[in-house]
Picture 1 (tube, rainbow, N blue to C red):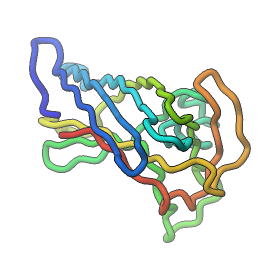
Picture 2 (tube, rainbow, N blue to C red):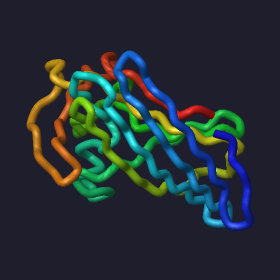
Picture 3 (tube, rainbow, N blue to C red):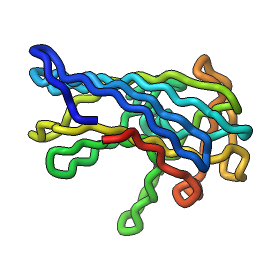
Picture 4 (cartoon, one colour):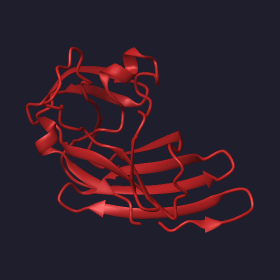
Length: 177
């Protein structure tokens, strides 16, 4: 969404849906230009009849480094295109040009049919970009597709460790610009 200004913060909101997964994403972005902090609050709703695996809970490495707690929303990846900023919670393919001794094993939240979950995170903008438009993207797929293991029940819900096979299976759901 395009940012609307006030003296203290810029605010934008967006709702979008991924029809093939029946997943709805509603988000609110509050950007404080002085501190360059974006505060994002969002809701994911599973409008379908199949449980979904949602990749917004980080990875094993960020958990091991105590960058966030198990069950909390992970740290998004930032992509910049001109003055457009996208914050992404998607599983990336492992690089093939380097040897990784400890891969960032994806963590997925299971979202039951008809269920919704709220998420919140704060993100410090990197670099010097001043965003004109913000959006966020979250990777998700149908749960139970043989790529999940080691379930753990948390206050946020059931979390799964996922294989990197999900890179090709996940679908991105992004808010509007």
